[in-house]
Image 1: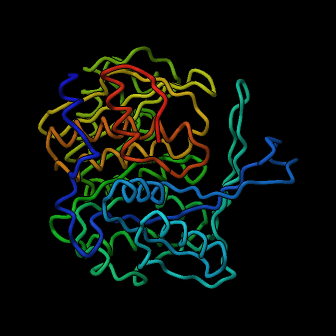
Image 2: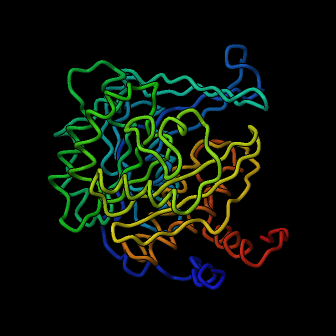
Length: 385
């Protein structure tokens, strides 16, 4: 196992196939303005806030762009200083923003009020996403043929498709845009999704009605948690029933448990790869992390060990892992090597990200590689810069 981990050196040139003009990775969705008390007060009492950005697809595009994959993010934002800041932040991290759709300046940008907790008080968040500019990104607004011309992997999130229900729209604008993108994408372009169920946006029944046919028809790479699949579809995990999972009444997960879960999900949705992120929250500040993935031919790879994280901010952690996993698949293909590399890069990148404040993954390939190496070789030397 140690030799397998050490064979991956992402600081060397493994990006030779990405010499195209247009992005190889494209994603779309909503980015929220995140308001976090700067003085650690309760949200209702603070007079000073940190403004940052939060959003699954935005985070994913950023980590891949930072790792050298030509990446584009597509959204609809108001033509005002918040929209400009979102665009400029993306550009500053190497993300292509050519396909942004500009809404009238008075339209709202989605917001997320987020109060940082401490054991035993949990972190708490409040969405303000109804009627946001991004939730109205519709068919006919993006030149998908141009945006996806060289795309090898298109990513979407289940969060995006819940925004219409959340806002009470008569039609699902983002679903319309997604279906238009699917009609325009190149034949060899893979489609990935993080299921990302959010009960604050829609009910399990509403989610299943929209997501089930979408996943079956379009999704090649499906990323999820055992909790989401238990809650929405009643899928168990080996020796543990869906009810036990929802109730939090489960013990150690054996390989055979996770394999059985991945096989059930793959059979239900006919995907090429199922990836699972597993978080063990011991306290607010101390979590443990592992992941696994299995393809439809039965190849299975699981994190070599469950690793601890001393958290500063967990938000964006799953999205950063997704980006690392996609990095493995994009550089090695949908192969056993791609899955193995993706799991290892994703695990290292997200463990670093979750020690950083705010959602955005300001993580380098060099420090990710160093952590992958130290997991094998041991040691905790101070990093020289």
